[in-house]
Image 1 (cartoon, protein in one colour):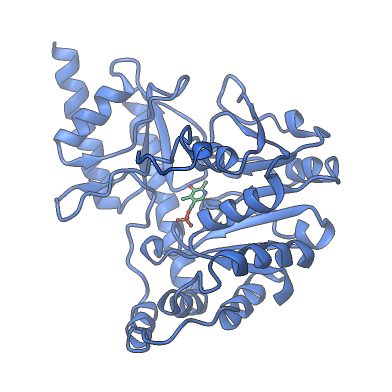
Image 2: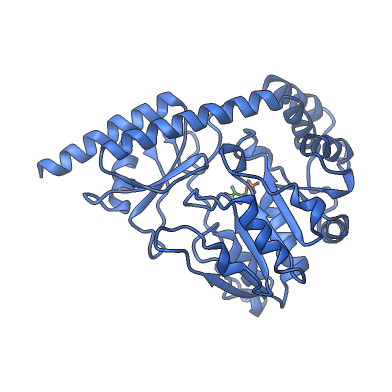
Length: 355
Ligand SMILES: *Cc1c(COP(=O)(O)O)cnc(C)c1O
């Protein structure tokens, strides 16, 4: 820390991203990226736009917003796009939670507490149930802003649209953000509630199901007044927040929706295969509807399993957070990668039992 940093940022605990090894040959199952490449048209679009990099991008991102409104059955005025959905979360906390109350699950996406602290929100972390699921009743009529990842991270467990609606309709004087980063892998979207309620934001990303984590593209749907507030923050910080290559990639990705939804189906199949194999090996696994599983085993700690897998060239994610330190989160890769994971895991457990 330099002697120039403003006092209020000194205690800030920043977010820790998962490892992104450069060049090293790992089977990378640690940051929930898609194992499948972008579609051909997306790659072509990026190349075409790269020749125009001397020019700024469209600050209104018109084409992209139109494509998203059409795909999700909303009006153009209900769409906002951002540099990754992390930026939507950032703008949400900045615009609506600065010096205000906000509640989110105690175990969830690691960025919520960071933004809460950054923008001085009065944050309440609500514990999960014993089975690591969210009790939606804990959020009914609490008269605070609310942020919930659905499916939740890192458990993958879902709430139903009906449960989300009970939260939204009982907190009419507060905003509820539903972070649907993983919704394409089997969750139930709440995007339709945007038509009915003026206090819900439904946030999604191209990073997970649409193979564009490196392009940084997020989007959300909400009442047009809320969208205007988010635009106000955007134009006050970074009007060209989505670069021209990424905007064009987003448009093409929506045109190639079938390809991506097919990939999501493959990932679901591989997830179910992995859950079956891991259960047979004695793992406890949460009911994940995301592109990862969250698993623990009584014969090996989460940290040791993470380390053993790493030494065998497989990267997964381990959190030393209380209550979940015995788990590992494993992103769903290709069927082949997951088969390798299963056989390596068998070896590791066999070696343990022989000790
Ligand atoms: C990955 C993730 C995000 C952020 O994704 P971006 O890459 O910033 O679009 C947001 N919320 C959750 C729950 C995530 O897992």
